[in-house]
Image (cartoon, rainbow, N blue to C red):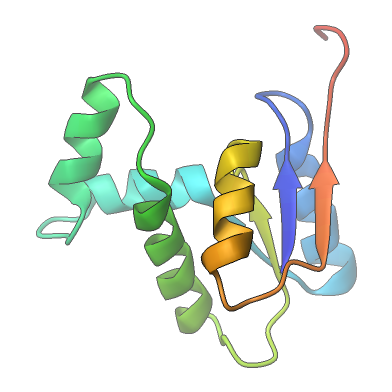
Length: 117
């Protein structure tokens, strides 16, 4: 699993697309998964995600992790190569995830864009 981190417009999606095209990674976007869950009728977390976002808060990392895990399982968990775009959202979440998760993080890519383009 490779985590691609950075602010909006920093190039996360571009780098993930390159890893997908050039090296065969499965690209999972945390934001895309959250949006899809919100729009899926009868979804387990949709209403909760919707209300949290309407309040201007961040969706708890436990929900995002569950959505990522489900997506990884559906795309061939065993032996799969995954690049995750936009998660974890901050260092505190990364530290908590590293301490409680049974998977090890081998690589993180941090994207930055020093000026507006």
